[in-house]
Length: 446
Image (cartoon, rainbow, N blue to C red; front, side, top):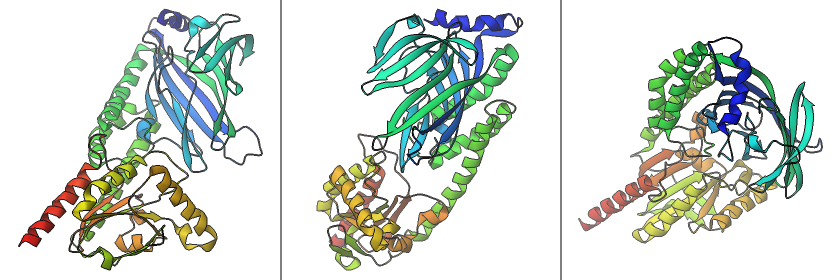
C-alpha cells in the first residue's frame, strides 16, 4: 500500500534533482458550521498544514482554528498515519452549547488507495465507503467516494486519480441534542520539498515533538493548563525552538506557545502567592446550604478535618475531568470514619438569581445523580469562594481545593486539577489528609 502512495511524488521528480519525490507540503482550509440556517450556531474556520512523507506513509501536521472551541497548543500538532483506520487522527475542536466536541478531519492522502475502483464498496467501523464514480473537483480528475452510516448518506470525499491526494471532503455530523453540522475541507496548495527545505523543517519539528512527549498529556485533553514542571520543561526549549521555527510553517504555533508560557507562568506565580497568603491562617467563617436543604457552618465543622471542593458542578457537560469528582467521592468514603469531611461547593452566580436559580440547582443535582456522589454538595453564588480567595480574579480556573485542619486553619490550597494515575487517585490530597489526621491524634494523646 505504501508503494501505491509513492506515485504522488513522480510529478515533483522532474522539477530538479534536489527535490524529494517522497515528501510534499500540503495546505488545507476548512469550515465547521450548522447544516441549516435555523440552527443559531457560529461557524468555525480552520487551516491545516501537512508535511507528507509518502515513503513512511505518515503526515506531520499543524492545525490552526478560529471560532468556537480550539485545542490547547500541545494538541494542535502531531503525526498521523496515511494508510488504514489510524487513530486518533487529525481533529478540530468545536464548542457547542458549552460542550467540547472533537471532530476528526479527513486525512490528506486517501487511506484506502487499493479500493479506488469503479463500483467498489467496503465498511470500516460502521461507515460504508462506496466509489460512486468519476468527477472533476477544482479542475482535477477525482474519484468521488460516498460515505454512509446508519442514518443514511453522511458525506463525500474527492480523491485525485493520479495521486491519491484528497482534494476535498464534506461530512455531516451530529452534536448536542441531534443538531446537524457540516464539516468541509479542501486542498488549498501543494508544493514539493527539496533537501534544503526538508532539513529546515525537520529541526523545529523534532523539537516540537520532543516537547510534546515530555509533557505526557493524556489523550483527548482539552485543558490548556500546564503544571509547573511542564511549564519549566517547555521554557528550557522555547529559545531553541523559536530560532529553528523562524520562516517555517511552525512559526505561528511557536508564537502561540511563547505567549501561553508567559501567561501561565505569571498566573502560576500569582496563584502560588495567593496560596502562601492563605496557608497557615484561620479559615474564614463558613455557612453553606446543601442541595438537600441542610446547613453546613463553621460550628458544625469545628474539630474536623475539612476538604472543600469549589467547582462549577454543572450537569450539562458530563465529560472529563468529571472523573476527579469520582476520586474525591472515593476519598470521602475511605476517610470519613477518621473524622474527615468532604464538601463539594457548586459555584454559580445563577444561583443568586431567582429566575435562574432553579435551573442551576437542577444541573447540580443532575451531576450528583450521574456521578452517584455520596458526599454533600452545597451551593455558592460566589461569596464563600471569594472569602477564600477566588482564583478566577487571577485569570485562573476552578476547581479550588481547600483543606482545613482540626484547629480551623487552612492547611492546603490548590487551584486546578490534580494529575491522577488510575491506581492512585487523589494521592497528593489523600497524603495531606492523612498527615492532618495523624497530627490531630498526636495532639489528642498529649
